[in-house]
Image (cartoon, rainbow, N blue to C red; front, side, top):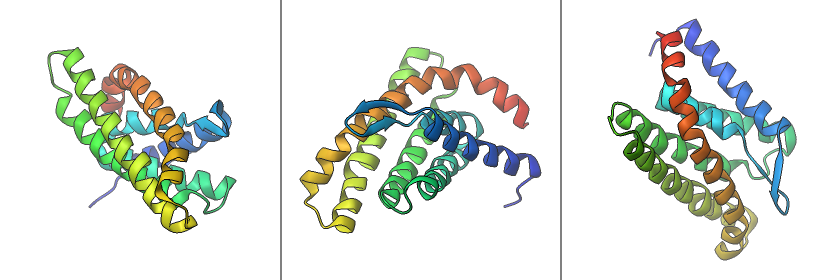
Length: 174
């Protein structure tokens, strides 16, 4: 696979934006959990740049964020969750892009966001943390319900935002 300088630069910019939004704009919502605004960047990349780029922005962005803030704590589960969210949401964004009915497209993208976040964050992240921390699944799932809800809200908010930026970003890339 041949990567151009523009694509690598765009990927680096996306990762940096993911980390900056996640670190600098922390909006507390539940106990010790903050809304991860980096998911907006991940969603825009999944929609406009491509499934692989969006998934890499979310995955490498969370790895860099975790290394800068808390080391390896929480990273493996979050990485796996972002991979699932990036692939499922990115493919849905891609295949619904040309739909005439904007509301049907938003509905399908919303279903993809909710289901992929449920699978990635609520289920898989909880399973990974269950093994890492030797805690019961229900305890990890109860903890990750906050992350699931917060991430879904941000990603659902990002869907119309993706539509607004899609043509401009794709025009720049080509």
